[in-house]
Image (cartoon, rainbow, N blue to C red):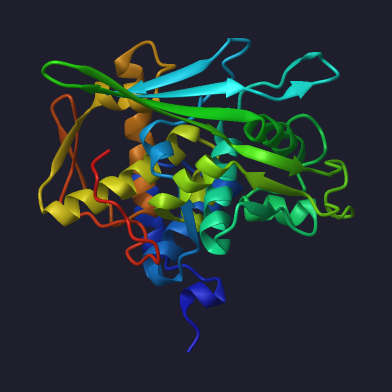
Length: 333
């Protein structure tokens, strides 16, 4: 028998319920309809997930949401952990360092890189036969044109930025008598060779484009990666905050379900971790609440409760991917 998911049909009642949950007005846009269809698919066939991974360290501290501009270093602090990004690539045309990776696309690239590194067990990653196939693997559309705002051009630019970055984590270790400091410096890539024509992603083969991950970066992203469902990532891709909160939530769900105890997270703490660009905590709370509601639509196993000054993850929550070939670490983030 053909299921509703196989036939392309959707139960009208469930789609309407999700639409009302998100307070979506008529008429539906193509993107909104795709989002609702994906939400129904995930609820009907949770076992048909498309496995993706994100490095645990990059759940704890994330990349910039917007372009930091020409600053010597970019940092983000979460408790006693500090993420530092440095630019190591040079642009011969501008005679300046290549910019910092920012926004949704580097996050999708990191999902792809971590997933491929876990799948293959090797540092050298092949980008595929054609650029269009590579874009589709990222959940992007090769048919948005070769202009500045097209997916093909933006991926080219953000790939250069990410592969040319060096990521450092610095951890402060206070004791009663001493002040300790632990640091790991990780170039994202040690080598790479990239060929593409964003104007014709379908026609041009990538001519053996590849990237070799830095050794410490490879070890870090494969040590205890957090699993995610690529179906959800594709429909959350417009918002870097939603991507960050999705993978954070699935790791938190793993922790709370293991401990059997809810966990309260203050909005101010979340803002430091994911929304350092917001000046007003109330603005961050507004956008984060909206993103979490959207995330719950494509992640029905996430159970949250409003609490004064923050949000509470309930122990009835479960990870977005409940079965994983990689052993997760229960270490709290």
